Length: 241
Image (cartoon, rainbow, N blue to C red; front, top):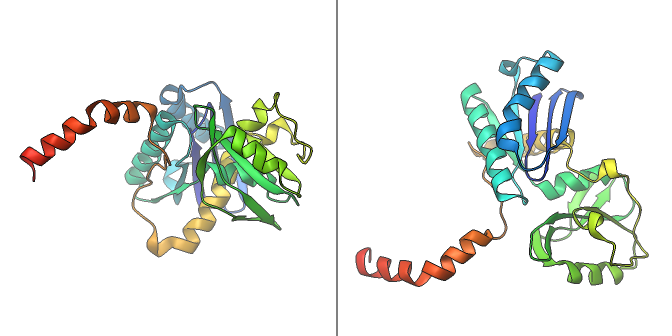
C-alpha cells in the first residue's frame, strides 16, 4: 500500500511516503506554526526527491489531534482535499498515539504529552507489548501538576515524551527513562504504520473524510460562549423554537 502521511499538529511539520514496507522518504521541519505556507511546498519537494508519483497513492494519513487547533485544521483540510482529488481514502490518527509509537518497544509505561495551554497537557497512557500499543485510558486534558503527582505515585518506569519532557526543570521524577531528543516529536513514518493498520482493520467503517479531534474547546471559543452564550440561547428560543 502506498501512503502519504502528514502531521501539522505542533511546531514541527512532518511528512512521509511509504510504499509497501519501505519508507521512501521522510521530511521534518521545525519552523514553527507556519504550516499554511510550508506544507504544500514540502510535499512537492518530497515527491520530487523520492521520484514518487502522487497518482500512485492508495491512502492519505493525517494526525487529527490533539494539538494546535490551527495546525490540525491545515493538515486535515490538506489531506481531505488531496484524497478527494485522487479518489482515495483518508485516515486520521491520534497525535498522542503517534508520539507514543517512538517507544513502542519499551518495557515501560508510555505517557505522551501535548501542550494544551493554561498549565495543562493532552495525554494518554499506553502499555507497549512487542511493538503494539494499548491505551489504558481515554485521551484527556490534565493539569501538569496532577500528572506529575500521578507519575510519582507509579511503581513502574515511565517513558515521558512530548511537551512535558521539554519542561521538567522544576520537577524531580526518579522513575523516568531518558529518551533521545530525536524521539521526542511526531514522526510521519509512524503515522503511515498506524494508518495502514487502522485502515485494514476498519476499511468497511472508514469515513470519507478525516475529522479534527480537539478534546477541548479553544480559548477563543470559550471566551465567545461566555460573552454571547446567553444571547444565542435567547435568540434561538425566540426565533427557532
